[in-house]
Image 1 (cartoon, rainbow, N blue to C red):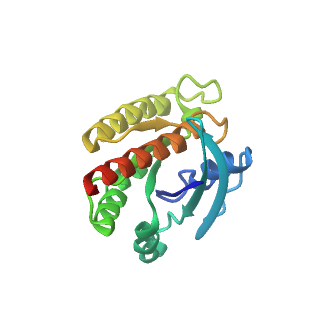
Image 2 (image 1 turned 135 degrees about the vertical axis):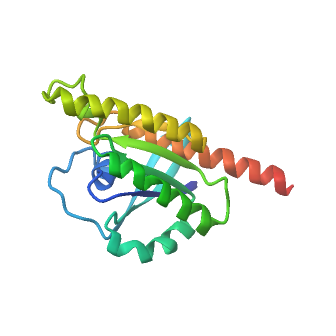
Image 3 (image 1 turned 90 degrees about the horizontal axis):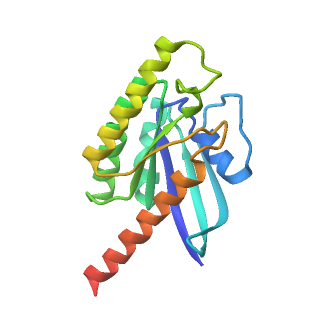
Length: 188
């Protein structure tokens, strides 16, 4: 059975653990407990093929940046996660992307840009402050431009409501499969 090593990266507090736990255990973790490194496994069916997702949930905190190279080497695909209510977390994405490309020594590393906390977007009834909300809409369109520039998919998710969670992870697996096929062709 195929196994895919996925790595979830992004700044502290953007919801990397909440996304991963929502995928694996189907529940939302409300309290914030900064991760150093956690690993999860789940058997799923994607496009009719059963496979195992081996997911590494990483530290967003800057003080753990030294261990990043290590896990980036082993990862096959990366979810680049930012929060739709934090401009800074979107700006941080380029550093993660550059580090991944450097460590993997490749331009073609499977990646998906993930804007989490979409439940806080303006059309959401539990977000009354429209000033803030307007900024979030712009951030989503900025992110779409960033993804286009990087030539990677952009997915909006909510770890809280589970919107887009499977789609983000499954899209990444599809990219890895595609990359693996292309590598096989190149090497045959």
